[in-house]
Length: 346
Image (cartoon, rainbow, N blue to C red; front, side, top):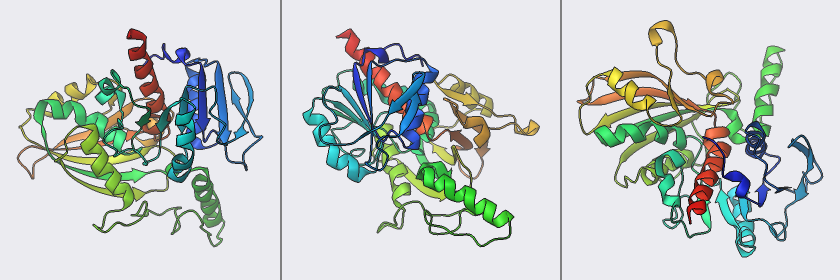
């Protein structure tokens, strides 16, 4: 996607500028040489005064206050939902359109949950003030399901995630690094971010456990897929696992279609035509998408596409995307691009 409309934004407040997603947001702007005249970098008092390289020089991070949004027309929040809940009202009072990366507003029926390639048209006549961006595991799954859904219909979807530690923040990445060093040197590991050792281990719980037995992360995938795809009754099952990788989330997906499909090549061709999805699928030559392939990339990669013969019309595939990019920062920038493209038509 080209970002030809983003420079129409005159003022933007970035809340959570020192976090992994905030830094990725600025990096993408630099990658595409997008210059927004006024970007205010905001973070907690602990990070106030830090500098971040952007637009060829150091930019100072300011402390987040209720007055931080004056003069900005867009506010992007990439912080825990408790912070979003406290400060979004101030951004709205200052006249900002808000894009929130937490789950605070995702299931609000009056707030669009946007993946531009799928439901960007919802922003055409958008008159609200809040846009939500989906969970970093939901987005790549939805990207691959959308073109399949339109042709074959969806009966049931089973999602198993393999989520990197960057999804839990910079301290989680540091914990994986330190534990790896400790183990390689024969030392006892310590853990603070995760409930169990993450190095050389997998943890089958992300978030709190709910009454239905799902973790909060699993429940996000279930509910958000239904909303994004506009299939409120879609049967979805999800298992979310934290794995000892630094970046990009991989997801194993099993789909039962309403209609039978012809061949796997038919599926590949359908996916290749969908914007920002790339098929990497020659398993006989050990060619399929891995974390290293997806990291710092803007595409959703899909491979290991194969028929599930245990049901009438079943398909298995592996999908992976950079969780900080398409899973968060890039999706926000794409949403803003679509929003301002529509506004330019009015």
